Every structure is written in structure tokens, then in C-alpha cells.
Image (cartoon, rainbow, N blue to C red; front, side, top):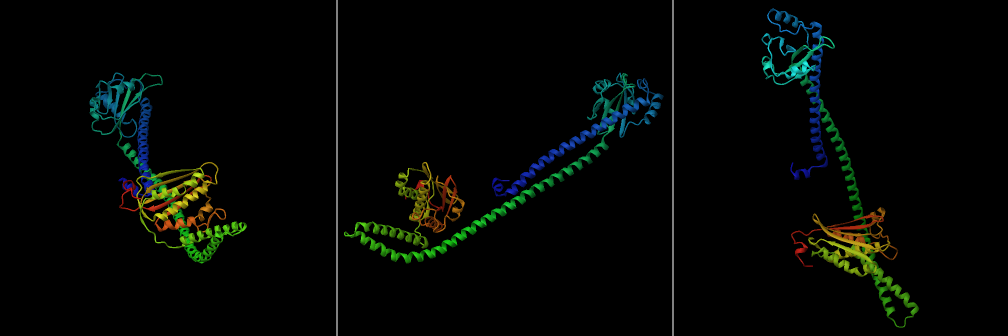
Length: 471
């Protein structure tokens, strides 16, 4: 599977594939271990059974000294009749009887009687009291007469005619293993069948669990996305309703406010105005000007401006926005750090409107850090993220609680003291960014600070800022 194809797979598909490979590996390993152990145990039990039968039956049917001299002539026929009635176990195809001198005393093949074969290590071990088994190819000189058999178990069983008696005879027994291996094959087939079925069931169980969990997570994510979309639609609806209200109220207030402002300015310019009244008139003028600014903000918020887009540098907009607050930040002993990407692409946007957004966000940060002890810090970072330019304003203020976050972009919502804010700043920012096809969101934790993130689409087919020094 190519890397691209792997990236396109879902988490459940990846888990299923990896789980399948792991189960195949462990299933094959387990099956091999079990079947190998089964084969070994069945062969071992067969060897032990034959050895027990031979060592028990022979001393009962023969006497000491009877199995020492080779059986030739008429003795061979008599001894052979006696051996026919000797039950040594199933599938015994050949028997040889050796004396302590390494001479074959009797065999069901008469030609072997009386022969001696050198280098009989297995026979020597048996004469020392050990039961010796062998399952190798019958290629040695002593196996010339066993070449007709494909799979034989060769077993050397020492014979004692009494608990403390010397070993004077060894029975070499050959068992045909074909029937045993047929049984082993059936047992192996059963083991492999149950192994495959068991691991297949385990695979289906694991995949089923993961699939159900993935579906549950997918449903939860869908519900969260739908809730977020609904919240955005509600916010857009509220903004649209307030826009209409704001436009009407602002225009109605502008005329009387203009009259109030004009007459108070005339009063303050009079030389004969009593000083005790001058301060009152100046207060009226100051508040009238504030009301004029509020109505201007309302009109700006409510009106659909024709955005004058041009190819601009977001970094330069940020630099100029910070310059406007330089004095205030210096007086507040506020530390400002910038991490502006040198190769940041340009975008098509209204320079003045984007500056209005950034100035508002910087002003909010300045006010936020002024309420916490210690040195205030503001970090501004720009970077390209996919098809957008991401701008992050991070302060170390007191943070914003969850309830406030839900209403932060609502018109007229403010946490500032009376007279210090209109509650329109972030709403206006929200509208400006949306008109540019971008997005604005906020991340905040109490006692840790706040980050406002603005994303604006990149203007494609233009050189990055590093290659273009134009403003």
C-alpha cells in the first residue's frame, strides 16, 4: 500500500488492517507451537507405550539365556512361531533381537540372523540401560532390509530378567508411523481449524468494538459540528437583526447629537462663559463626542461597505497597528513580541479594515493585561496554514470564562466598565473578517491568557512577501 493510499484510509480501516496482520502472525505462531507440541507428545507417548509393552511382555514369555545365541535352522522356525504369538503393540512391522555382543539373535528377516554391524551407537546405549529411539532415514547398513518403509520409528528396548539382572538382550522394534501420522494430521487439522475460527472471531469482535466506538465518536463530532453551525447561524441572525436596528438608531441620533455637539462647542468658545459652568459644558461636549463615536461605530457595524481590496502585506498591517498602540504599551510597561513569517504570502484585502480589526484586538489585549499583576505580554504571530494566512494575538491576561466566550462576538456585549466600551468592537471585527471570506475565533483559559486567531484566504498566483517589498 502506497503512503498516499494509507493516508486516505480511515482510522477503523487502519486498525482493521493492523489487527488482521497481528492476528495472522500470532495465529500462525500459536498454531505452529500447538501442532508441533501435539506431534511431539503423540510420538513420545507412542515410544513410551511400545517400550513399556516390550519390557513387560518379553521377560514373561522368555527366560534368561534363551535370547543369547542366534536362532538358525529348525530353532529359527520354532522361535518364529513363538514370536508370532508375542503381542508387542500396534503397527509393529519388524523386530530384531540383539545379544550383548552386538549379534542379531533373531529377526523376522532370517537373512539378518547372526550378522554383526559396526558403529552401533544406539545399540550400545541400550545395552547400558537406555531406551533409544530414532526417526531418521533408514540409510545405514543395518537398515538395508528396512528400506521398503518410508516412515518408521526405530526403538531399542533393553531387556532385564530381574530387577538387578544384567542386560543381555536388546529388542529393536520398528513401528510403521503412517497410521499415527494420519491421526496426527487429523489432530493438526482440528487445531488449525479452531485456531482460524477463534482468531477470526476475535478479529470480528475487535473490529466490531472499534467500529461501534468510531461510529459513536463520529456521531458526537457531527452533533458538536451541528451545534457549532447552529450557534454560528444564531449569531449571524442576531447580527443581522441588530444591524438593522443599529442603522436606524444611529441615523436618528446623529442629527440631535450634531446639534448638541455644535452648540456646546459654541458655548465653550465664548469668553464670557462663567468658569463654574465651563466645566459642565465641557463635560457635555465630551459625552456628546463619545455618543457621536458610538453612532459612527453603529453605522460602521450595520452598513455593507464596499470593501476596497488590494494586494496587501498582512505583516505590514500588523506593524502599523502595533505602532498606533506603541505609546500606550510603553506607558503600561507591556512587552510585545512578534513572530512574523518572512515568506508569508500576500492577500487581497482592505488595508484600512484589516488595520481596524488588528487595532481592536491589540487594544483588547492591552486592557486585558492591565488587570493582572506582573509584566504584561503580547505575542503576535503570522504563518501560512493551507490556503489561509493565520494571525494569532496571544496575551497573558486573566483569561475569559466559558459563558463570556459564548457571547463574545454578540453586539453590545461587553465585560468592560460602564463608559469604557460599547460592546461593538469585536462584532465589527467579526463582520470585517467575514466579508473578507475569513474567520475569527478565540481560545482562552482562566488565569492563563487569551488567543484571538484570525484567518484570511491567501491570494494565489502572487509572489511571497520576501520577494516583493511593495507595501
